[in-house]
Image (cartoon, rainbow, N blue to C red; front, side):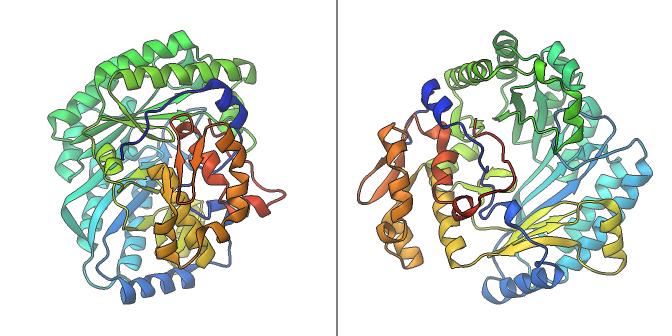
Length: 462
């Protein structure tokens, strides 16, 4: 059954726009605890070797270095111009790769690799090659593996993009955020359209199969008119995918955001108008709404995976590889192995000390119980498919859906009355008006949210 077209209902968005998780995992990262460490990670890998040694792998490497600061940024980063620091870091990432790969039996294929940051292209070419060689020496890459990297067009030349292609990268994400000069000045990210297009064109010439663009709405000094012009220029560049993120202003958590004046942020009504305009322009241009903040061309792998009900969410967002364990390397990197999530230490000093002691740098994590696995499955299906077949869940988990989730079904009555979802005896279906608010629907099934009286503040749904 085709998904309903996305519909923007400003009244419903305003009513249901609340703070909530993005569900790149369930349980969410705030449920990780320090009782999970290297020993538990080793146990999870041993269980994988025993139960599913041939299951494909996804790899993530966190490269935290930046030589300038963008005020909106909420990533774990290290601000420096000293390439000696990145060279040292790569040597230690090599050690972590060696430790973890030694715990993997057989030769499971790597079907995904992603370098994130920070600014991965801060690395010199020699450092990039050293890191890629280390990964390929320890893991077997599938011939059609998705190999992606995040790129800041201000910090990379077109010939470097060609070099990335030679290293095996075939997907590229370009940070744009907004082309409006006033917005760029307010967030300390001056970036021309010309240098951005040069990078995108270089990727296409170098054989990259997917070029993605990242935008942010809700930034300081942003207006409907200004963002409309940005959207026109982005659509003209014709990226294969577009991520349209909502800016979350949480300066108590991320110090660079303290340089943004609250008075410069668009008021809620203007932010909603910017979002409505973006949805209209992108869908009119032929992009398919995937979910959350992702759009893709109809022929893109994400759109195809969604039509075939093979879409998945992981720590990088929507993914086409639902059956992978994710091994994560570097500071603050988060991974998944079966029923376990892992999170590395957050600082360079901690990372180096752990690896100097030949200890895995896992700092926190969680092992999922049967209820977690059940709810993870339910939330994944809602977030990716926008519907939920009760019988499918019952067969997979040995439950009776209506009995197990009686409180949740009752809690969905108001959203159903407002037209966000349709519920019958066999299924939940997220409607066209509800798709933009699917996080709100998924939150109904989050046991930890229901039990928590106090806790961290998430980003707004919209």
